[in-house]
Image 1 (cartoon, rainbow, N blue to C red):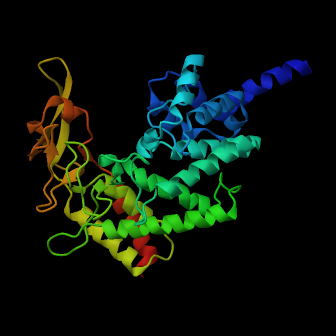
Image 2 (image 1 turned 90 degrees about the vertical axis):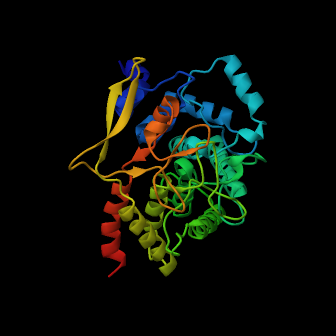
Image 3 (image 1 turned 90 degrees about the horizontal axis):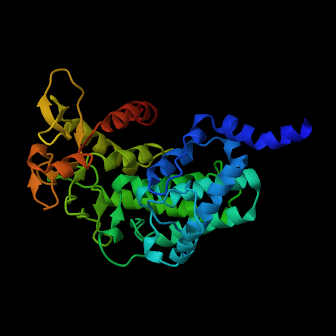
Length: 366
């Protein structure tokens, strides 16, 4: 009976320790989103299972010689020998290393938690290599590119898009504070993490856009790595004020204890912009179009929640929309079906910012 108990113990940890999360792990190779969404939700017991180790070994396999990771990889997938050989071959393809789509930060945290549970130095070394990659990728002005060391393209610009830079800075903040799971990180690296974080804050303050009146507003999704001005990424991602990417930046700034006057001014300027840039009296209405596909249009509404556009014109602060031809449109109905439905043009993230600001204001603006 005792032997049966020990045989069943790993299964106990697997199902009991991770609740419903593990039973829904998607092991298909093509669904990377399942990885970045489920990895932060694994509980501590999961990291004591054989499944956690199997996934961790996948993560090690995909780590590149830079110390970073490529994006859009489902680390939970069951790999064939051919898959493993391909992953090893790609380790030296350094242009794939990125912080986009939650890459690198997700893998560092996963391996840190796995080291916490197993005390295996292989995982510790990989974590430290990953953190050192983040140090190397940072520009002297404090910003991070989407890809490093890729030499050309919009990938090399300072990237706030999809919280890429914010995710890095939140991880580094946890590292220098030795917050779990990073208590094992050497003090010398923690000190570098603090310095790197502070440089990142300086970059954020230096890239905050001022309007024609000279007032502080918010940020573009990308900023030029040299001039720090808003810049273009993909054809439909033009220089703009971002109603989506800016929320993560403001929340990061509000998380700083004893903020300087400059940080305080940055937060107040962004909050003012969020209040002034609400879109009221509109909501999404979904319908089935003539081709039988799900589509949507914006319709007038009474007493509906305000929202924010993803992009606002730098000069007029009016929302705009863009197809792959790069031409600004005033109405989302003026762009094609593919981009209209394949991109997040509206959001309600401003509510989180404004809600957090009330508490921050009570604490910091007495």
